[in-house]
Image 1 (tube, rainbow, N blue to C red):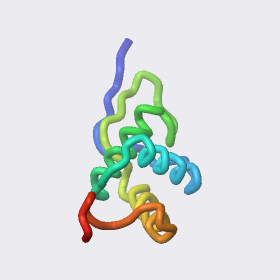
Image 2: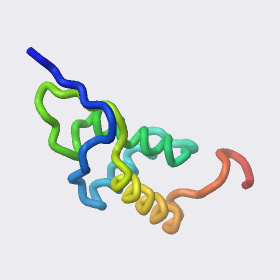
Image 3: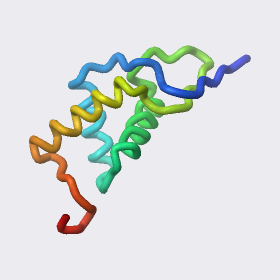
Length: 97
């Protein structure tokens, strides 16, 4: 059986904003701590790949990469909404910054 590996940006996500928000909440619940935006994007991308959700996965295909810039912008908006609703706070982990 021949398998294919695709490197680079993942296909455009088919998740709604609410579905993306639920997945990001799941990440924060499973892995609490401090995140830089780039590490959150990588963790979110890995989560989608591990769960095989977010887009149509071609059979016998392995995807390597992170979500593309447009979907990163959607994640950024969700994170800002979480900050505004006080689910997240900005600053250093365990520091008064």
